[in-house]
Length: 323
Image 1: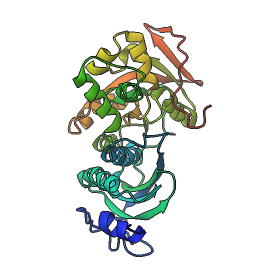
Image 2: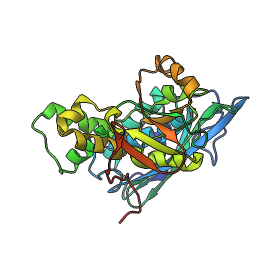
Image 3: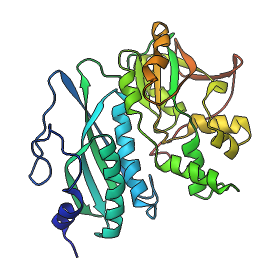
Image 4: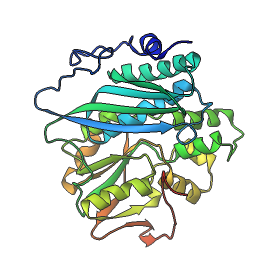
């Protein structure tokens, strides 16, 4: 049976990405890294636990993609350029077939975004994955949650709700008759793409931003709290994919999925009136659409409206410690 160092040497030391700002990566007690002059270092850590964030029997390549994509999405939300990642992997036993699939998915996404694995740890225990990603932002240009003001417009990238639909299919809570529809929604749940280019393009245009990991209705609240404002969302402006509409033909239920769906990894961002005209131009080369869904107001909380009239939808996003 392979030991810890055999597994590291076999699966993690050999990777396609070799960045010039990494003088020393895997193999020593620490990595040596260089931050470009005039840049700030953005750092984010997330953990994924089997049974909570993914099924233990899930395709390990999809698990790896989800783990890295969710972390890269945090960098996207701040407008950062990804650079490095460290990985702490806990496994019940050294399953080399699982590791091979995991590394295939992990390094494919890492190579796409030019991210180098620079260290980490492997240990025995319940299956879990912890990643720390690092990226660069020009000094003073980071998008944060605290810069929004009353009157700013609320936008989201892409479509919302597909991840929740895919999860419902994965857990057997719902079924569909169309195998192609099922395949598309399952892939969108497992293989979301972090909006790196969109986040970079929004520097200097957006007043605040975050990524949608626990559901729009929940995550938007973080901007509201940090910026001291409230929000009014026109539910009929929420962007829905044709696949979600096919999955849930009842429009109000589809809109509620869009509001509460977690693990979307789209960006929610706010834009001052004077910058609205720049949004579409800035995102033109990112391959990502953006939709204006509402506006910030004075006060507290989120108000859902249709035709200007309030809706009494009791919705909440994902809470790790909810009973």
